[in-house]
Image 1: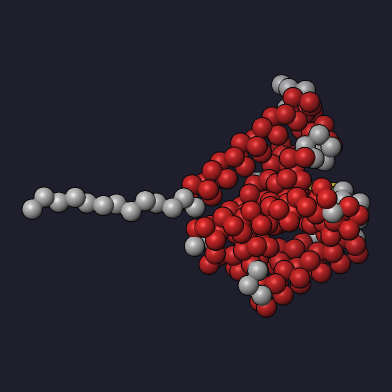
Image 2: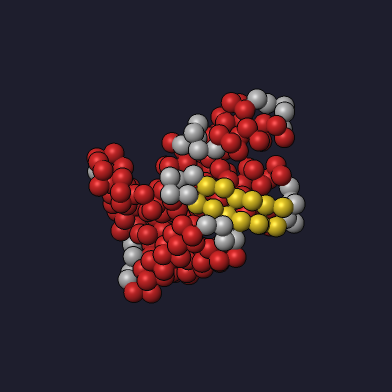
Length: 228
């Protein structure tokens, strides 16, 4: 069982790396909806930060070029801004962890993820593209969870893709967030916050991987020697 899980992780990792670095235009085309999903996680992180600090979400938008914007009202501005980059890394690691270590929870997690996207598409409506993408992606997740046995693999793929994309995009993707955060937290300049955020994500991912692979170790049988 443990060896099978490790093999699954390696296969998922291999597929992603081949698509991203060797797949050319076809690989990028296949990964485009995944990249948009990562944008959704980023924007959902902002929205989640607003909700847990007593604020409201006015609108959530995912653009075709991979950018996005979330409009909030109230709540903790610092946590809302951080919620995009750090929050999406947390969600990505969580999806990967569940897929790798919690087979019984994989289907439920995909259903919950699909539901969150459907609700965001309707309640936080901001553009037809956003709503269409979120609803189609949510429907695809629902079909996968209800009609196939790929729950774990899809979760691991989505989580892994999110983590890798976020780490690679650390000096591009969160630029506007970093600028706003530096204005709120003036103790460090924007570039310093960029590396602090990156360090947080890398450390989080390291401990997540450590927890996953430690859990996959095959324990040696305990042999008791008794004296007659």
